[in-house]
Amino acid sequence: MDEKAFSKELDQWIEQLNECKQLSEGQVKSLCEKVRVTHVLR
Image 1: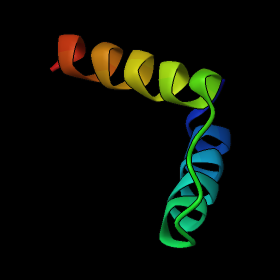
Image 2: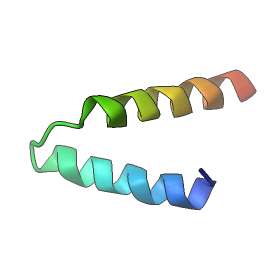
Image 3: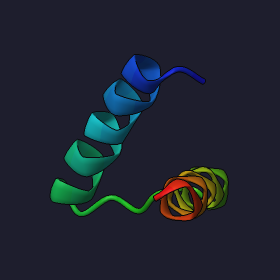
Image 4: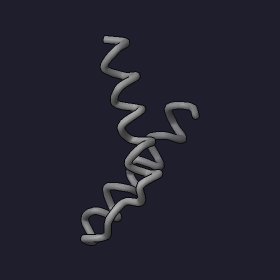
C-alpha cells in the first residue's frame, strides 16, 4: 500500500475511533504492521 492510501485509511480509522467505534482485528493488525515497519526503518 502506498503512503497516500495508507494516510487516507489512517484518517478513516481515527475518525472511527473518535466516534467511539472499535477497529476490527484486521485494521489493528495492519496498523501494528505499519508501525513496526516504520519503526525499523528509522
